[in-house]
Figure 1 (tube, rainbow, N blue to C red):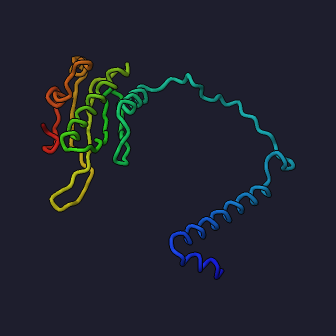
Figure 2: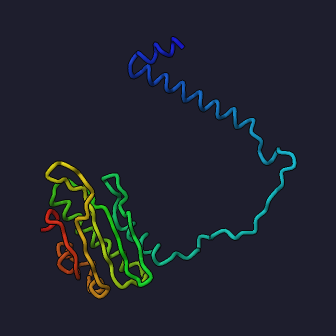
Figure 3: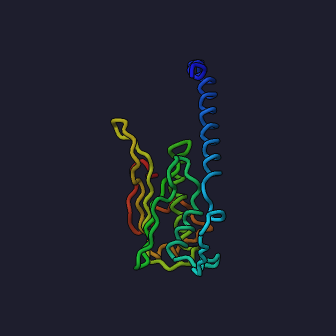
Length: 195
C-alpha cells in the first residue's frame, strides 16, 4: 500500500500508473468471474427455447415521418456545437411537418446567419424531395445567444412557416438562400440573424 501512495504522490505519471493498475485489476476480476458463471450450454436441465416470431427484414417500409426526418437529418451537416443537429422532427396526422434544428457556429456572425439560411433551404429541399405528402413545414432554428448579463442560453432565433404551394414553387437548383425568409408564408427572425 505504501508503494501505491508513493506512486500517487509523484504527480501525473504516478497517478496514471496507479489508475492503470486499478483498471487492469478490474479487467482481470471480470474475466475470472465470467469463467465461473454458468452458461446455457453447460447448465444441467437448461431448456432450449425456439421462437417463431418473425424478425423485421431490411425491406421493412418506413413511415412517412421517419422518411422525412431521415431525409432532413441527412441534409443537415453534423453539429459543431456538441448538440443534436435535429432535436425534433414530427409529422402530424394532418401532414403538417414541424422541425427544430440547431444552427452551427462559424467564424463570423455573417457566416452564422448565412449558415442558418442555407440550413433552412436544405430542410425544405429534403422535405420536398422525400416524396412524402405534406401540407406545410414549420421550422425553428436555435442558437446559443448571450444576454446583456453574459448568460448564454440556447434560443429559437429563426421561425419560418411554409405552405406546400410555396415549397413547390422553389427551384432549388437556382434558389438564392438570402431570399428564404422573404418567401416564407409567415415567421420571425431574431434581429441578430436578420440581413
